[in-house]
Length: 496
Image 1 (cartoon, rainbow, N blue to C red):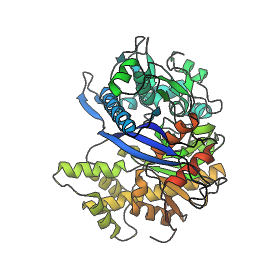
Image 2 (cartoon, one colour):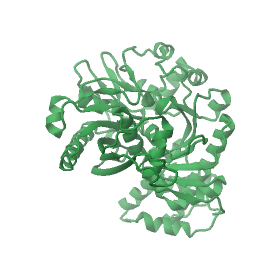
Image 3 (cartoon, helix red, strand yellow):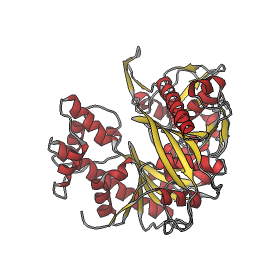
Image 4 (cartoon, rainbow, N blue to C red):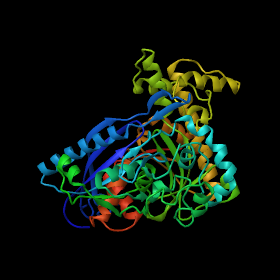
């Protein structure tokens, strides 16, 4: 560890909002905190926030609904945020040493040879893949897809989206963080943790699968070359440097650009522990950390995925419904004129008795937006129950359903992988939801270690810091810095 304060910029863009963060990494004092062993401390300053969300373009000429992202707007906000980072860092006498970008997975922009963005950047919730899933499966069976990629079936995975494109001739696909990095640097690369979510990467070799590209009729040059976390895309374009006030030689460094990869890198597990995690946000990513993929038929039928993590790890997990269910209900109630604070909803939901109605929280029927309270009630009714229309009852149904889904998923992950974690680390925004953490501890019978909330940003920054030589070591070293920098909360495994 170099004994000086170092500054880095983290760009963290999710499906509902984005942030640009100035991170300061300072050396830790030996013995300053029991168990931290002098690990460096990371302080995060969110200098710019901006909203993000799916844009509904209505129905196109073919009668299909179009849901897309405003990626140009996102990039404009990123540059505004980097300008604020440069200004604040400069006022503190700090030099920003690099920039790292993480976003959600699977979505991409198509650019031509001149780098111009072509066609809409569709959102994964767009229904266009409903028709392409069977087309892909006619060419490559689901069983063979799993043998090669180790990915769970999700109808919006990149390979199904690519099958819906009107043309790919002369175009190159850049996943969202890679697209932003391209606009910052002019360099085209594909970061490997996000590449592993496309359904086109070989789970065992970590390389693009020539077999799948050929079977699906995809050009070999569709994606740029792969890059690992810690490697640099390039340095800032002169125009970007001018707009942001950052030096043109500032590198953009690949991190775990799939936000879950960065979040799992910041799980505060102690060395030698089996790592079980719930990255809780818009989606819940529930699983364990492994050193090699599990590609068995039992794993496929259980719909588990093997995605790549930082330092060659495997994030063995399943996507489970997340807090989008809650935020979408809040959005619907607000449209009805009922602005209901989250704190009030959670307090009222906590007062309801145990044993209320539940739904399958990760069912595809809850992916699309639109009157989610009514759809939840309908799902409960189909199961023979009744769900009151009262918001507190709907919220309790969502949280009970999520806790039950987490329990099922972790039990399967343990059975399929042979890992036996002693606790569950909940990171991300959901770690602040006390009721959800309490319900999960009760349902799983394992203690919950909640935090850090900013796991994604921490993982992003620590990979940059290591690349710059501000710290050394593997994931254990990164996680020691997380423990030194974060106040964690434990929820005991007691009856809810």
